[in-house]
Image 1 (cartoon, rainbow, N blue to C red):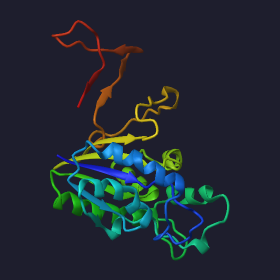
Image 2 (tube, rainbow, N blue to C red; image 1 turned 90 degrees about the vertical axis):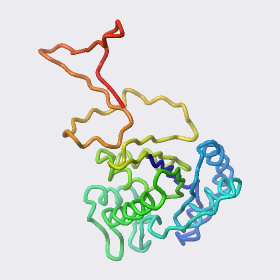
Image 3 (tube, one colour; image 1 turned 180 degrees about the vertical axis):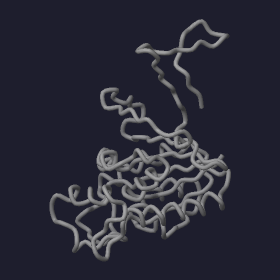
Length: 243
């Protein structure tokens, strides 16, 4: 089993337009303690990152404390953009076009399909080189969202909006020879927060498509009644489920 912790960078200074050198804000620097504390007991073998400063700085303290070098991987960088082609206001209405059509892009820009393709290619190389290791990767919001979408197509624009302000943010993925077999999204500011059942969505997916989940639970109805099962060794009725 290979485990990857994607670490979305802490808050960065949006007044600096150069994406490569954009630094963290004072708040972002303080929030690095959350990242270091979270990774401390995860038995990290390898630390990698996008070459952009805000991603590197987010995991640098942890890496230094563990005596690990940070390997920079160019293709983990954020969405390539030409800022002159972007609106000065209502940015998220504009970026929603990218999520509606993964091949959409303004001239000189990079589509989400291209962003996803290079990030997944970089990840595939990492999974081969560091097989059965535990890896931390410094990354970005758009880049990480397309990685999640690759393994879980139900992750869409609305989910992206939900995580926009979560800086830093962690997504754990587990991989074996069959691909991604587990995914967990972790809010470092509310690590034990329970999901709001009112906001949960129900999807019906084709057999063989659910590969990015740690558990599966099945709810079934027959003739307008709920169908339950009972294991021989227990005296309770249950829904079916398993790892």
